[in-house]
Each structure stands twice: as structure tokens, then as C-alpha cells.
Image: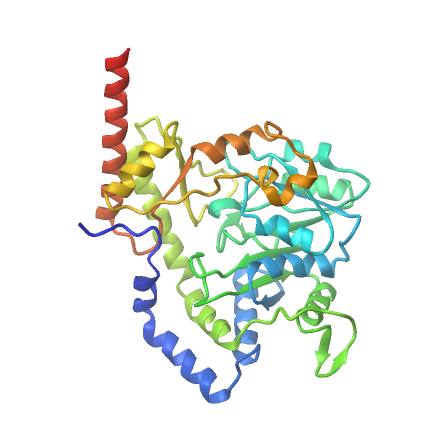
Length: 377
């Protein structure tokens, strides 16, 4: 029996292989391996796609977050509010500039930052609010922007899982002072390696980030400030330009797959994703909730179906952040999700038959569980 892949990059790249090979030839002939015209071209295209004036391409999504924090002058003694239910890179970037991550819980329906919890987390040291557009769905940006404006805080978007997602008709990434993207290969828009970008409409902030990503320099061997080596490779810029042309089509297919999952699983006890009324979900991940997650996970694995957990340990319970002093029970929604969520196969090249096969295994397993409960009762 053929396996059902969680993500299938082979099919995605096979479909555009000649376009990608042509990028390699172009970069090879020009020897434009670091930054260069391919990166500049992508920056212009991606800024236009998101609806912003500036894009600063960098070497990964984590450094994108670190770069904007550093460029805004956030550092030791400062606090940045973010969520406990996300990948650790969000918090790591805060730590990397010497600031303190302050966690809040997420909304139980959208899985994104709960605006009602943010105000209580603000102190005199708070400098920014950093929501995550998780799994491909936008956070409630307007509510968070209102809080940020009232307290004179920066609103920075972690859009690393939300390429092309919208909030009230606008693409995420250009709604706050800056938005950060990851182009890790498995993302909706991914490199053939590592990559990231920061989006902003502030030209002065953009200029500072361009300097910081390249050793504090705009002109070779002239350094205005200590910076970093966060530069994107020319090849990756070219690859991203090719893939950007296909992103809307790929996202549309992800939405079709999500709709089919929804139809097939709607009569079950599973907690299915809810698309919030404020925007369009692009389903980087299709995440369900189950009371007995491990049984479903084992059944899927036995059926040759790959799945994932995003994320099994919330950040406030990670050893890396034990020094922040958060105790178990502090963020009940994030903790509940960590023990109940399961990510099903989701990519633009999964077939309807494969989706039906995933659903069939889930339905069969749930029925067996129901029968066992009936017998024991």
C-alpha cells in the first residue's frame, strides 16, 4: 500500500522543475550567489503580493523575527508578548535580542492570540505584541492593533505559517509595523533550503534592517553599526520568485482539501478547524482535536498515513523557558491543545482519494472506540 505523505515536495518541484533549473543556470552564469538580482527581484514581487512597499529577504524565518526586533531597538530589559502555542522560533527571536518573552494563551476556536488576555500581560517594560498567524489563519489583528496603539506598542506579525492568508481583505504581513515570513521548504511558499523575509511599509525601518542583515553595511566595507550575516542566497531568491507565481493556485487547492476533510469528518466527535469570519485560511496545516489522539495517530501510521503534532509541548513548559517561572496550568487552552491536536496530511498535491483514505481510517477508528465504550458501559 502506498503511503500518504504529510507533505509531498517531490511532486511540487517535479511540476515546476524546468523553471527551477533555469534559475540555477541563471545564477550560475552570473555567479550572483549571495543577495544579487534574483533576491532583489523576489523582494519586489513579494512586497507587491503582500501589499507592502518594502521586503527584506533574509536567510530564515527566525532571523526575520530577530532582525525586526533588533531594528526596532528592542533588547535587554524589554518584554515582548507572544503566545505559548507556537513553534519555539517565535520566542527564540525575542531571546536572541536579549528581551524577555511574555506568554499569553490562545483563543480556543482560532488557536491564535486571545486579545482579551493581552492587556493584563502588559507592563512598563513591554515594547511589542507578537501574534502568530497559526496554521495558516490570521489572528484578530484589529483587536490587537487597538491594544498596541493604546499602550504605544509595536505590533509585529509572525506570518511564518500564513503566506497568502488574509485579514478583512488584506494579506497578512503588512498589517502591523512589520510582518515576518519563513520560507522553510514545507511552508506554503518555501525555498529549496532555508529563507525568510520581513515586510514593512516603513522605509526607515526597512533601511535599518537591510543594513543589519548585511553586517551593518549598505556600501561594501563601510559599516554604520554592528550587524549580522542574515543574507539570503541568490538561488533561493530565484526559486521563491518561481514558486510565488504558483502560490495562489496551491493555496486554493489547500482550501479544497480542507473543505473535503470538513465534509468527510463533520459528523464525528473530532474538533475540526474553524475558519474565522475575518479572513481566508490558507491551511498550512490541517489540525484536528481528538480525545484519544494517540489511538488515531497509531491507526493512521498503521495505514501508511503520515501525520504530525503541532505542538506537543507549549512554550511555557519547555525546558528552554523554565527560568521564566510559568507553572503547568497557567495557559489551559495551549495545554489542552498540546495533548489533543493532530495534524493530518495537507499539501497542494494530495489527491481526493488520499484524503478519503485518511478520513476512512479516522472514521473506522472512532467507530471502534465507540463500540468499545458501548460494550464496557
